[in-house]
Image (cartoon, rainbow over all chains, first blue to last red; front, top):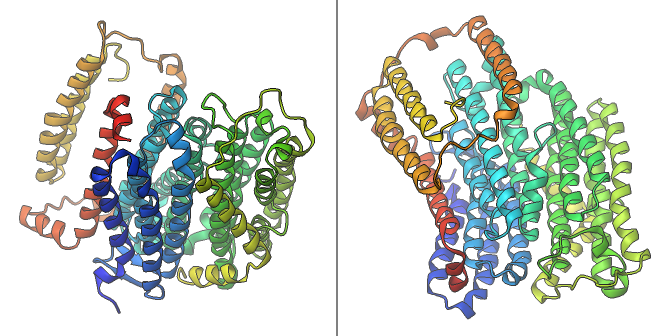
Length: 483
Length: 148
């Protein structure tokens, strides 16, 4: 047993880091602002370290509002990894556009703290506040480039539709409370599914609200515009950070809360999963702008992860059930690293702010920047799901989970969709290696910091693809915390 | 409120909406929430919205709403949702949710600072994030460059 405050040590450390960065930013001269990046990154490293101090604690604290278990530790560690990558990828892009680094770091850290709260919520109240704490800064990051029309549009759309989704979720929570007299996730499950018509409405609203945040079809309309408008490395964060949080929310609400009545909502999740992966992939096929293509493909990835949740709902054997959750965790982490890095490569080709990251910018990249082209090729192969990358094991994990759970048709849908996705991912590789560069090629950002972060992500993707055992055992131990 | 063309009229209609909500809270045995509703929504937020409209609208406030083209689709969806909710409300046994239970002010205050301490503190973090974001968005770009 640990006391309440030690149990939330990671949250306290992260909050302290936010306030520290905010204060230090005030006292730094303009030429010293770069110091904020190492402060943020090292601080996040320390926060990641504090996550280990609550590993294995597995208890509910603060009068039942907060659950510190191994599952939450996994989500927090994944959050820290994504946060560090985001903090490393962004500075050079921001500097080229004269956007302030201090505000970026502070807003990023706020969003991460919301993801921390989401991951540990055992009550609908904390869950909702955590969600808002995560997405409010995310709206800001989408509209971070204030003088850019597209960024304004993306930020505004994200904000309006996101608030709408939050309102639906909140309405669902109020129905839940009216019906069950409780906001505890551990108490609402049985009462909701026995609740008749009102229980159905409540579950429907919770489903719509939370899958909206994860950008599942048909609730995905905000995604392409918000992702395309945001400054590119920030899009990388937006496409993985809030998505990680949304899946933490889904795992908490549907795994913790409604887990035992999985058979009731399995159908909805399975249909949503197939709609999402197919819808995202088909529209991504038609895109000629790589940034927009990656935005749609991130929707498709949501579909694969939802398939893990459907497998969890359908399985009856406890071991197989956890496998669905394990697949979600593995996929979310692997996808997070590869997608944020892929977006940042697009950002590196936008050193000239007038470039929009079209497919032609990648033409002949292998001749102009062989290392960058090779890195991008690895990322795209990983997103496609080709060994020996982490993307392969992520897809494999979901496939195995669905087959073991007895929903083989879902596995077939995933395999077909992966083949569909290969077409548009490999098209970029064809452009890089087999096309002549355009007459006026886009200048490449060669800042050492971005290159370092890219090397780190690619190395991670390859290493975890070759030796996935440590991460698999981490995922297994974390998922065991749920049931 | 949503059918009016003049945005000021819409804002005033929204105030009526807020006021009726406060009445509903009072009837449900939550006078504290009702008072907060009047003070915060009716008093502060409505005035703030009116000011925001006054400061941002150049000249004529009678701008056509961009949503007016979809009015029939919206009406249809709204009817379906109302029908579903109405069905759910009438078809459900609400148990003792229909019993009005009041809570005393001191009990609420105590709960807020003991059991609900953590959500309360996280809310303050959320407000801080919102304030910083609002300042960043409202600041002139020239000041950004000076700050950077």
